Length: 360
Image 1: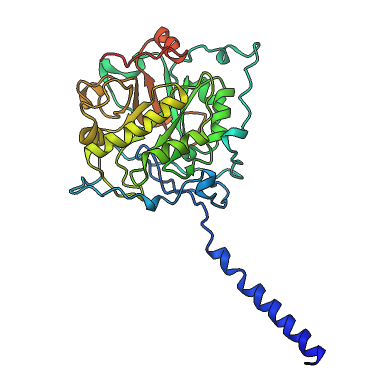
Image 2: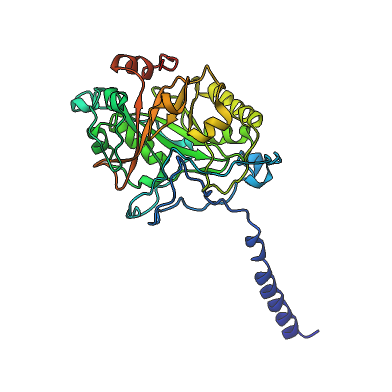
């Protein structure tokens, strides 16, 4: 064979190899944010920056598999989504952040810096009085949440860039921050909110939106992987509800719901040394939680009536009394919450004394 012929053959072979080698890229299993929202909040019309897309880590390296591999059965006669007592909260138009914050593995995140001893009084652990407004105020009468001393908020990516100093000055003494949902989604604003809330002097905790199409153990591992175990942090929260916006349409039986929740909460309690708090909404509570978990603290959503009317006989620790709060610290609306106790009880509980839920 002549030399020019050999050279031509080699060049053609290399070109062919280069073209076919890209086929493997399409087969990569790339992580994508889930479609989850929480507290029945629908997506705002304005887009909000997402976390950077990254390659999926193999199961052996600790990354979890796709949520479609859950073998658990779908419940029969599932109740359609919809709350007679609740309102769906529409967030106002917001400008998207300039860029999504860089996400870091929890193990690589430095502990929060201690507050300066000479910081203004509002950063020294004092209780800030209620100063929020409400787009849809409810008259709770003598049972008004304003009669309770310690108010706070819960946030997720949908609040955009939060001005935590202004939020604190408005009356937020604590914040529960969306961390994870399912077994593979980290809220892209979690770590920024986690640091900034602490720097502004709020007591902070993290919550997980429970996904009924993933195993409880996987979800607990994912939460533990992404939420630091920090001294002084509030107990973790499991958010359990039926959500019509979720991509998971499963409605497990009551027995399966209780079983999955127990597995998840046991793993978190072992890791963080704190009993998790259960957040729920009226329809989910009615279907699954009446009479269950009597030795766990509850955080109850009741935006039209007092919790004693919506959840008869249930003791509670936190009450989410509005999904339409307004504050100088955020654009649009924000969930408002209150602690069931006075300032002394708050300091005792938030200081680490695991107080059982208050009486009605």
